[in-house]
Image 1 (cartoon, rainbow, N blue to C red):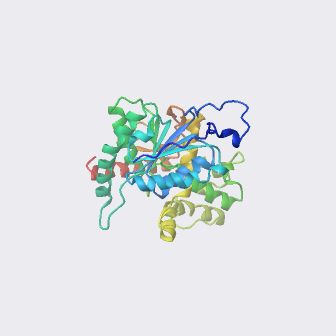
Image 2 (image 1 turned 90 degrees about the vertical axis):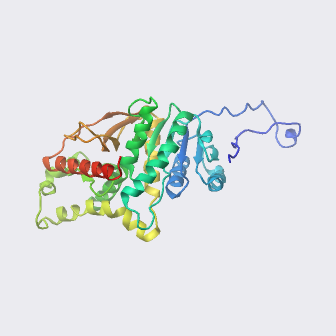
Image 3 (image 1 turned 60 degrees about the horizontal axis):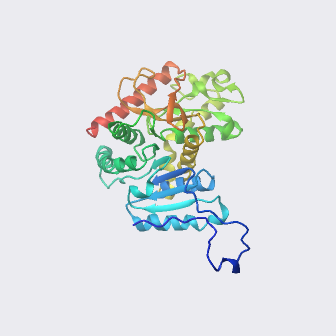
Length: 355
């Protein structure tokens, strides 16, 4: 089921003069402007859609979900706020027809874990879902950039990219949100402890979007200050808690980042707002051709000694063609070792699911 597009066009007709003094004919809506499709209208998908609309990044938005009634109602709910945002034409439906000619496709759909189901079993089910869902989307929008948000993000990005390659898509047009969210959490927690604005803290978490993610302490900066130059204890291995109270406090942050999702889920049942804002930023970088450097999930083989054919997060240049370059940031030996371990973890996950 597909809902009709709502057009922001002044109506015309013989009775219009009863309401307005027409000074020039109003042309029909051109139907152009940036179009983003969000696949999946769960809590994450709708946070992405809401962020895109309220930040003014899109002129056209498509919501696709197997539950057509939910997609239609979510679209209607968003339209009812039209008086408070820039004009957006919103469509909804259950198949790729509604997504045609998208500039960006955001994938948030996927199966939820069943009671007693292992992570490899869940991954196998999601791989089958993506095998059926992705090809029609790529056919409907052959020039789009695809951003994979569904979890496990790195492996599902790998699967989506492989499908795209078999359909002749160029490299870089598929990437995953990866540790862009982890890095945002890292920056937020650092800003709180350092007493400076989060947007002025520059810090990366790389590797898996998951338990093996790697904080890159050697590259944390704010105001031109490299934190490790002043606090070298951040780069040292500690069998016992360090004596420096600030170092001791800062070193608790990576564990907080890893536990952040679980902590929020325990309280509210899911996470959605931060990943929605992060995804909107990724879409903006594509739509505006920002050439922004953001850590996202990309093919990692050949970088930092990684030999496995895996996707994981590295700093990448993002523009209208998707990922156009990967920044080989300088790592300490410890950070490189941790990144290799993260690649190993993703590789084992793929093997466990038979991928």
